[in-house]
Image (cartoon, rainbow, N blue to C red; front, side, top):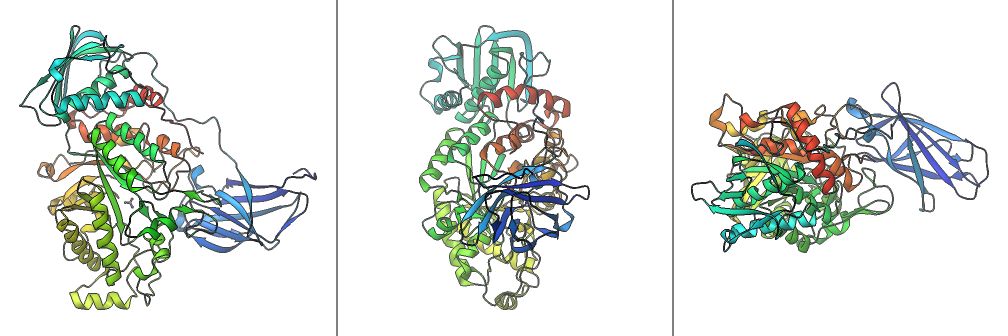
Length: 639
Ligand code: ACM
């Protein structure tokens, strides 16, 4: 470090993964006068221990405040310290290095710290080469694969778009096509309809299922057949995709199509990272282009409650922004300045309306009983004051579980579920129920009494009792309950009440639940979690608890085992999930989803025998790079 005097103070934190897979850090400064009496604040992806060089003053999940024995830092000096992730977690990529660092001075002011990660190749890209030329493969480059396709060998030039004729008039089908036109326009992938476009006839065909359609593409024009607005929508979406992927000259042939599953979902964790409303609307557009039809909106978790509910305004007012002097500190890279936001009820309505036009329903989630750390900082009355369980969650939060033995908790859960049910017309509500820390409710006198009163033995029994009672309430509102796979636990058989369960750790818990009669959506992390890194390369971002989830992995699975066809009706679909621990900015969402979101589209829609293999999904993804670029989705944003 140069021994120079300077007018501006620059504090730097160099970080790298050392040969023992620990995190080495070097704090240094360039300044006129030495800096003293400071605390170093930053975040890690998960709880760590200090190996040497510093003392922990505070740790909240992965957020740290550290002190140093020599707390005077001048030009030419440096402080070294080392961290190691708890529970043998491996820092497999750049997401695991420190983020969002700053110094807090004794007077409460803050100083920015520049983080300089070592070992990162700025030129790294795992982005697929964009297919510039028109696809020449015999395979149809359409995601998801249609039920059947018989190419005629001809081509049709649709570069000027399509022209609807009188056959479209007077029905919801024309509105569907207009929604596709508007989608194309706002995403710069038009023109879709134009006066001098290719003739597009509509044939109402009663025998087809609601979501199904047929396309006859000939050199003379196109006929789209469907029985309902949904089928007309998916048929026009197909034409929009073909036009884009084939550069305006689409192959002619006969197509018959319809989805394998009713539930084709994409989830987004908007609690750990606040996404701009515009980003959510654009995600819904992308979902529509891939024929996905359920948006699972996860807006509350340990870190925040972001929906501006009227019943508990303190929840979002106090947890919506995090950082220095906030209820929620600078977790997951957010640093000192207030970062975050909340979603107004007007926006929720707009999102629902936007989605509905694109044949997509919105599933909101109110997460109970765990993952409630932020809510508990604001409403401590949701815990038994005499509870000494001191549970620590898998993310490292202390005491993050609300207590169903308390009347206040029932008021909270019922009021919130009632209000939120009223906002979302889909009339489905996800109640969370994942990852209750094993120690939760083990030392609560109120829980002991509840157990005695209701003949409950274990904490899982308490959870089963609670979920069943809450689901029964939600059902009484005319809303179908849903929850993560853990909600099937408990001697009572779990949540019941016609709930939909989401299998996330693997497929096994979902299969078990389906065998018991539950409706199940499959979201196995190793195939459908876009927060899991796509490979083991250090330059990637992402978690690793489920290994790596590559593009090939995203299609290399089947929601229903071939040898249990009786589960076909119970396993109602598949869903991709994006949890946001590794998301530092909205564009990271695009990089984590594209191209793997193509996989969930294929899994949810394509017939088992039409699902692409690893080679074909890679070819398709290269073609769809065109779509991602055209609508401005980045596949290479990692910082
Ligand atoms: C989950 O990933 N904890 C549902």
